[in-house]
Amino acid sequence: MSPRTFHRRLREATGTTPMRWLLQQRVARAQSLLESTDLPVEQVGERSGLGTAANLRRHFTRLVGVSPTAYRRSFPPPADPGGRGGTGRPGDRVGPGAPGGRGGPGRPAGPPGLTPSGRPSTGR
Image (cartoon, rainbow, N blue to C red; front, side):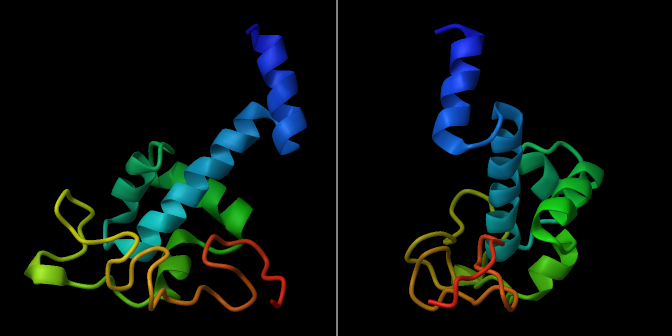
């Protein structure tokens, strides 16, 4: 598929450009890491594909409306299963089904008026 066709089809499917779509995916990954780990903001930036803490702060604040640190404060600290801490390293129990993990029972509520992924809530 040519780059032009890819760009056109992605825009038809998502309503946005490939670069904006990728940035939204990276910010969503950063949100997940901020909700479920205690990684420093610098590592969240790296692991989410934004590269640096400065890039994370700039894009996160623009898309979500709050800083990464303020967003993280709206969630309880990650669970500490087995005494390993919520470091995001392999073996940590964060994710679906883990205590306080993404999508599992007891999932923490996000900031008021926003869903956990940072989108405005619909009131449902």
